[in-house]
Length: 202
Image 1 (cartoon, rainbow, N blue to C red):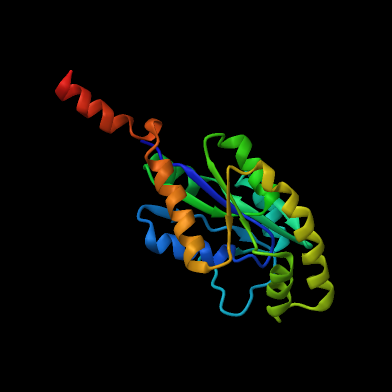
Image 2: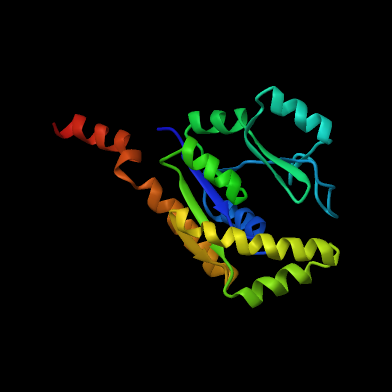
């Protein structure tokens, strides 16, 4: 059977990156899609691991070449999802998990109608404000822009198939893991097992 797409979205500061990395450690058979971006590399980030860091010229060239499954411009920087690696993993039966903004999430909903789309919510607006301001890696103007965008992004929650509140990290990891495991048990994904049983009992 082919793999499925699991999209993780939510406002800036809600903990999406940490959740994706932790979930991969506890759920076998998951492959994390690495996005490309033109934004500057933050301290500790590695090219090809956290992002593919490209110049704007390189990014635009890849757009023309049809390299991206989807792309968007956020806070003056481009972000995009490389297409080929995802299709390769899905064809091999590997589930793909992506951390992606709501614009990209909407695009993938069109491409993968049977995908699983998980929106991560903060426990409260105050908690989200504290997380964004607590990063201390960005100036006041960027923080203000992130908070304004967060308000807009929260409106997209209704379009997602699942919602997880990231109040306690371990609980959120468990909830996302359960969602993935439940999807793997859908009848459509168990066809080969059912077929083998029918061969022996039919």
